Image: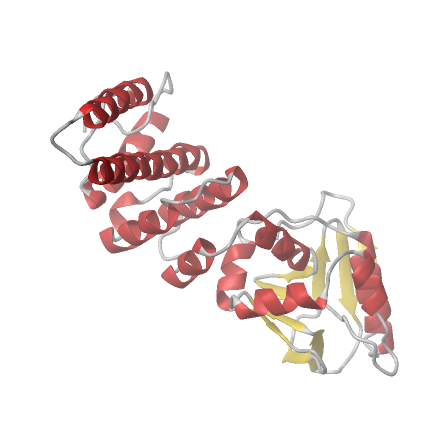
Length: 298
């Protein structure tokens, strides 16, 4: 593409410009986009005005067809802008290890078909992180995640962030621990309700395939390494019990993928609920503070 690009590279220098150029080249080639000058914004806006005005004045096209043509044209341009916004945002998350040559054209085409109608700024950021993340580490994000994301909005994303806040890291695994129950010994429903983590939200996330939710019993899993990180806290479960109760929620494979991009918000109330529940389950948790840093990134 040389000096042409679907985004304005501005004054960024090498090797960043080379990384972004390779990134944009791969996308343009995969989609068959016609390359456009760096001043794409002003050029397209002015061109759109002229074309729309010309079509609007055409007397040889009946009003209904004329309206349909203009409406469809505006839709296509809006979709192009949405896609371009996500490409521009994604450049901020690219790393020097990005591997454009390893990304299949099929995945790129599928991705951009899903993002063409994304208008919310928050969702554009999530999508841009997925795009850059796939280029940085190929085969990280599946088409299944892209499909699920395409039917999500920022409200659903915010509900998932609450699930993300219940995740603990035990390298290399991420576990969701949520004990939203009013069982014989563990009664936490009101506590979760106060944090606005409702049963309806969990069922919705389950229907989207992001989590596996159980209403009446807990997911269990054999966990050998019973040391977990939560922010700057290190939690050790001093128990010989092999099968650990995770709680009502287990992350699905696409839920784990989504955890890589949604922001982690550590919550002392969630930590307290887990510690209390672990005590009642006989896991004997011991908490230490990691003074060296803010904890292992999850």
